[in-house]
Image 1 (cartoon, one colour):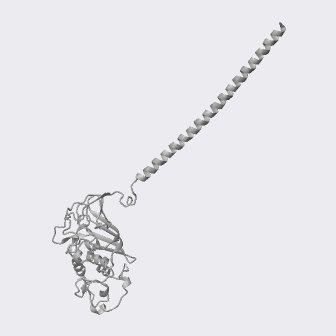
Image 2: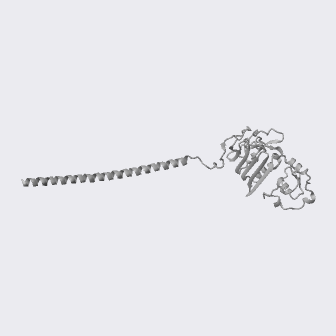
Image 3: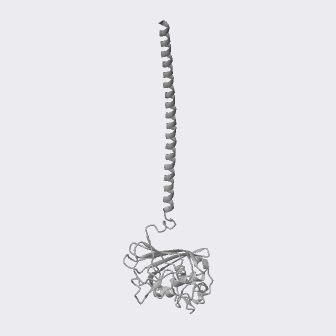
Amino acid sequence: MKKKMNYLIFLLTIMFMVACTTVEDASIIDEETGSKEEEVTKVNTNENSEKEETVTTMDEEREVEETPGQSNDELFSGYKLIEVDGGDLSGYREPNVVVDIGYGDREYWAFTNEYGQLVRVIAEEIILQDDRNEPVLSSGRYYSDEAKVPGVVSDVLDEGHVIADSLGGVSNAYNITPQDSALNRHGDQAYMEEVIRSAGGATNFEAIITYPNTKTQIPSRYQYTYTLMGNEIVDTFDNANPDAINESIDSTGSEPSDSTDSNTNGDISSVDTNGNGQVTIKEAKDAGFSMPITSDHWLYPYMDDRDNDGMVGE
């Protein structure tokens, strides 16, 4: 009997040990499985993170690619860029806009203020009219007529180009201002255009146009800045008849240059303020010379006698 009891105890002990071993193995397997699942989860999480980061990066790149060019944004800030036909005869200008007024591929930019007044024109390079390769009329113009800006219907005002046809400018309202006829045809405006033509063009061109009030489209003053052969030139003049201005100056008591002093050579650099080798009527007046400058005056060779009558500024 004692032997049977010992035998049963022995069997129970073995069975207990086997059961414990099985539980431990299962626990180990569960732990290993859990670790593997955690590793898989971590891997999947990392993969998803990488995928999400990649998508974000691609979206950012797509946004950059879809953003339009910024080259003129700063220049045109505050202005709406519009297109207007170069031969449009309408005298109306939209406020706060910028328009390309260069003929063909030229880029000449005109700006208006909140009152629709043309206040600024700029061009990196003035390219002269090419009558051999461009459809230029027999009159020397691209178009048969100019925009009818309010004020141009006058006996004393021309449809004046800010940038002339000969310099590659169009004829719509964004390049036309009512300009004194004498100033436009043989005054400082005409002289400036001739200087640029003679030089074969210009760079860094800028026109600043001012008005006496916010209601008129007739300028009171022009200022042109441009570069010729490395020299910066600034021309400033009123929108008025230069002959009348000269007469007004003479009537104050100033005497015209006479022949006794005319043959005396002077220092051209003290008169030629922009250093271009030419003396304008304004430069001569600013230096204290009275008009007209006659052919026997030492300044005469440096000035432009357009009608070849031996006098400048008459």
